[in-house]
Image 1 (tube, helix red, strand yellow):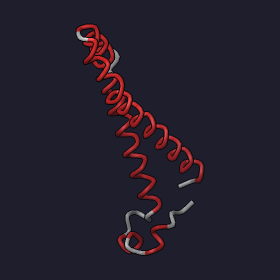
Image 2 (cartoon, one colour; image 1 turned 90 degrees about the horizontal axis):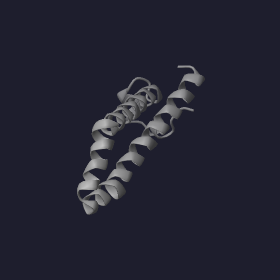
Image 3 (cartoon, one colour; image 1 turned 45 degrees about the horizontal axis):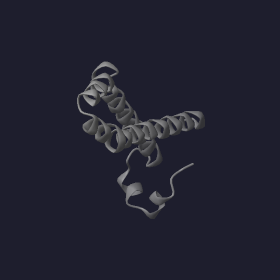
Length: 96
């Protein structure tokens, strides 16, 4: 893999992971508790965010992108998931 491709994969992996984690924490910590307190008005907001704006679709896409790019980077770093490399002490020092 070229160094530019590795950098792009790392950036995409980090950004997708940040979006994924941020969306989950925002939903669980702020949006859903606030909508439970506000009653029917909260239900309208949740419907708008989840059904109309399709937030779950974007969160799932970010999760999939983070997992796939992480898997590709791990495959590259481990020489194609080589068992000899994975069980060695050198596996702690990923290639740069």
